[in-house]
Length: 303
Ligand SMILES: Cc1cc2nc3c(=O)[nH]c(=O)nc-3n(C[C@H](O)[C@H](O)[C@H](O)COP(=O)(O)O)c2cc1C
Image (cartoon, rainbow, N blue to C red; front, side, top):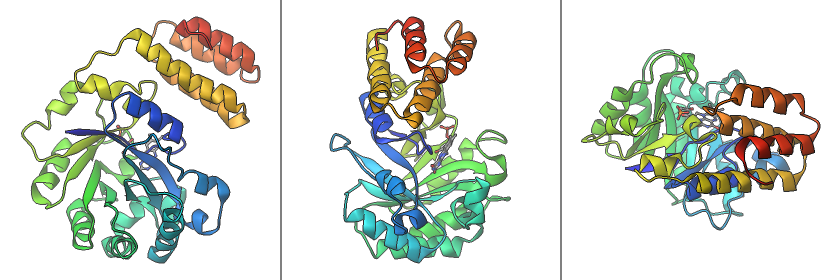
């Protein structure tokens, strides 16, 4: 079973994807990229589509509500980069995205979802996938999956929660993913609540082709190797963490400083004293040398 890094907005950057490959990911998904912003030539958005040459299998994910806009964005991006494939976001529950008739709003309009897939199919021979949910307010994943298949999608990912469940509430219904994989003629990847090897065991003997790890990879980019049964040493973990922090220290921008604190707080999860550690680093927010000293002490690394 393949284990992928899930798309996570503002997190699954080139840097985080490279770390995840080092940590055993079989493939990675970019964060969602606004098709509209690409067509408006927003430089920051376009930079999200960059893929490092060391990335072996990275998919770019687009969100948008208008088939023609997604088509134009894909054409523009494919002139610059060749991803492993293109993924369409039909699951984002965030109000702003839904208001733009994109993300999970596409689940309420399977015809438009199908049209988006069909339009993209006309633009590229690269693998095309769609990431759906169980439904918007009520389950209609079978209908949406059928629209994706009929219009040429090569595989599909499902996060089996309703839009109203957002990311954590409601149940993440593993049986929905399993049933869908039985029915569809294309591979199905499950996304949601995978943290331990025992979570993966629930898919043994099923047709699920792969899983995605989202929040489970935060502060733990080596989780992929662990899920595959490998032991990752403390030295290896510290080396990965050091590389990650150094990247942001070298960038030395306001956003990079925020990312240092966010990732440090994820890396500290589960360690003794992590609540105090988090308080310290957020208290010292504007004093980066001091934040770095606190990080060095806490993780016993040398930045
Ligand atoms: C902070 C955050 C950002 C996310 N961003 C995206 C995104 O850009 N595109 C997408 O399809 N899903 C996004 N998701 C959903 C995840 O890809 C995933 O389906 C969901 O978190 C369930 O998986 P998990 O339990 O492994 O985190 C996001 C989730 C979180 C928590």
